[in-house]
Length: 352
Image (cartoon, rainbow, N blue to C red):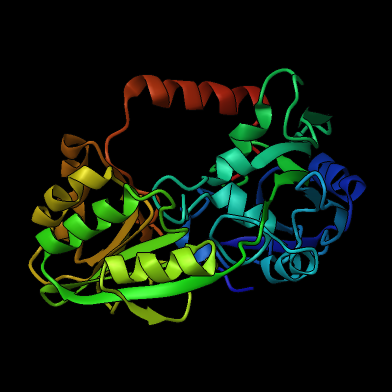
């Protein structure tokens, strides 16, 4: 693992007991899985012990009939996918790396409009606070009345609230057939019309992406269902059949030197307004409701400032360490709530 911030030591943990021991001794910790997402996160504000949960990599439970499973945070996405495929199941969210990292980072969002977000797939978890307190939240089943959904705080926390030791996940059956599709050389109005028309169909795409190269747009995705329906659906929109889109591909791509990557969320109806905020022909992509674009620093600052005016939000996820983590304006009440939650769960600010 390579880090562009000061690291005192790297500690590999294998169990909940190991985590409690580390928490009792370390005063500043950066939790990681295999470290693959560190270049997209805000750097710590002091030297840290990097604590890796990559060796906590066991699939603890798999219940095909209940469409649920339980895994340790270090389980690799590809290993879980392989185990689920044996039972005709899959985890319907994007992301690569470790399962803990996918949910803690929450960089992907839904694979397409009207598809599940990672937050809705996390049924419960077991975890440890920095003072050694162990707790459980949610449940291992889809329907439960297990009190506060504290596990939802883990999604998007970047490992700065507590350390998860087991995640209980909701699964889906694999469809009878899947077809990849694309439509290229589109103007933005035509691309938006096609995207919205697909969304309104009885079975909308499972994966849907929009990218811009130069001045033209390409719409790609995957549609699932009965083979006969898929053939009719493809013909209806005059699409070209291609390989199904991967659910594990993580955007944004690495930008050219001197550029920063802004990633964020926006409502579909606001995509034309978002494009109007960007320099002409700059690289731009959207999957589900999450967008990415590569910009020079002044343009990145301008975009972050303007996003709230169209109901969007953004964050710099690739650039110099001092720039990563800068975001568009956040409601002061939200900031206050996030601060109070962090102070309650990690009062000494151990997790960086």
